[in-house]
Image 1 (cartoon, rainbow, N blue to C red):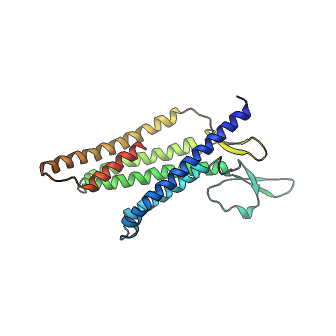
Image 2 (spheres, rainbow, N blue to C red):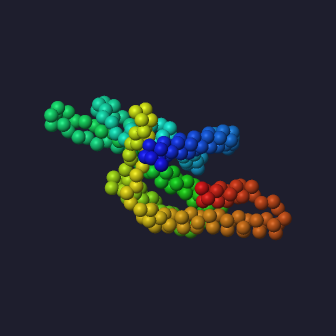
Length: 254
């Protein structure tokens, strides 16, 4: 396979994956919107409701950007623009000074900046989602302060790991860069290039995965105990407990 064919193949796969992501997000939003209106918007807003809305809609934004990045929405590797157009916060800006003209050139690496926004945003999204899981476990365990302190104490190192991984793997040009692939004058796309092996990321994410497993085990333990108690009393399980534990498991699988 020639270089041109490989580039076209990669672009096709990027577009197909992007279309699938966007379709699934729209489908999920349409399915859940009626329930969201009933159980969130039509009720008195609380801290948990605001946190849910932030996680839901920030997650949708991240998924859409991930779907269109590089292929469906072409973003050049870099271009020069006048200073008065530097209004987009998620872009990476490099300023170089020309001794011949006496003017500063502002180089905006759009593809790289958007990729950084996605990676840091994904880490922030997972941290907010885990706060929701911690809050729910706190309620399921009869608002045990000991349980809350243990979960938060273990959660802080997880946040530090997320930040460390984002800085070490995504924010250093020596570790990751974005390349502009030009197939023809009108067919271009961006792709990310990784300059280090996968082992640092694997080692860093092991404690995070262990923490997620710990949360799932706690949730399943609550459900088992709840089902046992209800069976002894010959009562049906509490629907809310079952739903909360189900979403814990779904979050871990995803």
